Length: 461
Image 1 (spheres, rainbow, N blue to C red):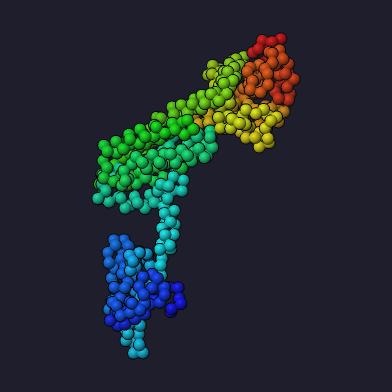
Image 2: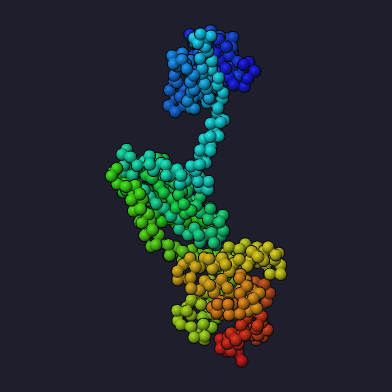
């Protein structure tokens, strides 16, 4: 017993300490010789961790109940010097040959680190790893606890982050994660200490506001919106749609209240989402043009040529306007590509840089299709780097598999690039550009469309 790792203390039938091993001396702070003969409760002081009230004396319990017992998991041992540690403990009677109790033996160990790890594991199981807010599992548990009389009126606020997918498409998932963390941080700072904030889905949060009526809930939501308006990610203002509903009494169903809050949130999202996305796309385009001033003039030229080409080919007026927009936004996806890559010519790029650069068509497509009125021309943006011979990107389409709108945009883009201000290389004359276009018939371009563009859009013989 002197050499075992657990602390061991034995007492006589009156509860006086008779024996302590080295581990018990370390944990209690008492020397074995000094403790011998003292009352057990003087040497072994314990508290119940939850309320820090004195625990029942385990020796007395064993002597009275004449059976082994275990202490609660949250028992705290207070050493002689005042140091506190959690312990695991069991106490059992010492019986003689006639089964009479002659004393009690306690075996205990320091469980502080074990409890710390258990708390960490429990915290992880209830915590969203990205935002460090409560997760869906915690929300499902705590909503049952709050759905009781002392917490009424209980307000549920459902929040949905606007533009998360657009942010992911434009800047990558790291930016999307940063957006979610920013929203969580604002909620944490703005809400009250007793409010429960949980992330229950990809871009969805729920706030449980106990003892909060509709008027106070409205104030909290306004405060959240005001705080969010001051936050930006990649130059884009952070935006969240909110909806709330109040559970006044026990007779109301919690899920009905949640559904009401969610419906209001979706109404608000529908009202603001489209304008928000268009605002974001305009902001992205402005940022792109500010990075490369030649790109703005190039895009304007492509827009004019694409619209004129569509008119010549007999497109309806709304389709002509869509081609004009396609020309304006055709390089939008470059906003997500590093300027260090964009500023290189294709010959200077490494293989990996070239692959990264080629993603801009797909990125632009993903951004544009998120807005309903931009979706019709997003396909043209996606495929405007396809080639007639099938050697283009992103899908390697060939001949008539390439949408005609994309072919129109591709021809307008190349011509504008040849004759306009260029980031790489000097511009050429209109006559030289026409010659270069004709040289690319049947390889890069549809030969019929090339001749139509040259003779009817450019009015060149």
